[in-house]
Amino acid sequence: MALKIVADLCTSCGDCEPECPTVSIKPKKGVYFINPDTCTECDGDADSPKCMDICEVDDCIVYA
Ligand code: SF4
Ligand code: SF4
Image (cartoon, rainbow, N blue to C red; front, side, top):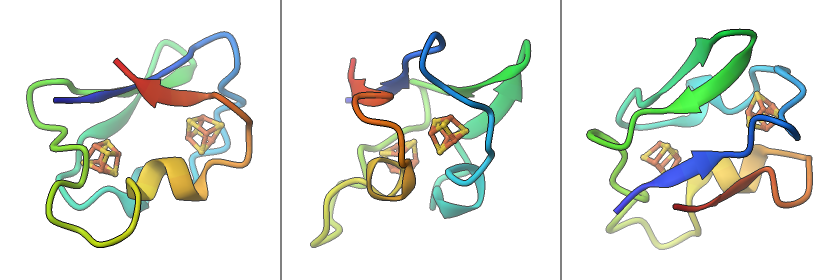
């Protein structure tokens, strides 16, 4: 149960980082990375995953 960031598409804008309720998104090697051990896919929220909603790059954040 985790999402992942496609490193080749991530522009490192950082918009997703503060949106994550589980603090699972961190910068790593110049792009951003989702910790699969703590990402809950925003389970329980009515909306779709918050990071996916905020990221403006198509298909940058996908289901792992
Ligand atoms: S799906 Fe939710 S919990 Fe997982 S990284 Fe995105 S914002 Fe964080
Ligand atoms: S919002 Fe998208 S492009 Fe911006 S840092 Fe997050 S994953 Fe990368």
